[in-house]
Length: 138
Ligand code: ATP
Image (cartoon, rainbow, N blue to C red; front, side, top):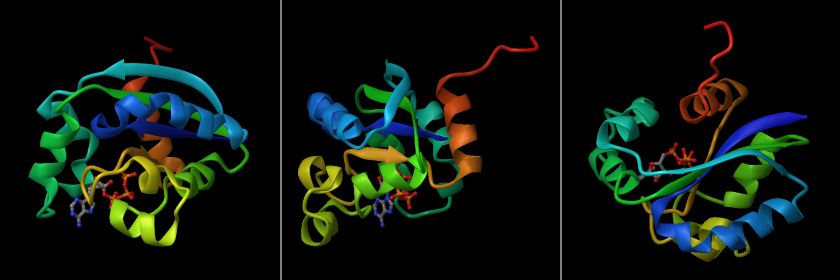
């Protein structure tokens, strides 16, 4: 079993129920969940790897524009499974190429794309720790 960090972005918060149904139907289990509104600083930290990209400012503004729901998911190949369920990054591309995907159904455009999923075991570990810090050893 693998773990991943899934996030429902502000543009899709009202579709949380639909997204939970999608997660459930794919045999992924929600281990932890938290609703929070990120500050600009927290959104910048979360998307640190993109800080030099032209879309960074729009991205962190959007990500701190309203509540998000972060979830730790567990299941077989959870990282790849959740990213396949999300579909392509750009919601318009998702509507063309991955019609049933979360981004096709609930995303808006290239930045406001309904959801996030970790892209590797290492980023899953970092992102789960970001939202659900472990206190073990302290
Ligand atoms: P995420 O990391 O959120 O799961 P992803 O892995 O599909 O998405 P990344 O390349 O990591 O995409 O980009 C992170 C986020 O930055 C995207 O989900 C999207 O919100 C935004 N983004 C990425 N590329 C663009 C772009 N060309 N124009 C505008 N926004 C973008």
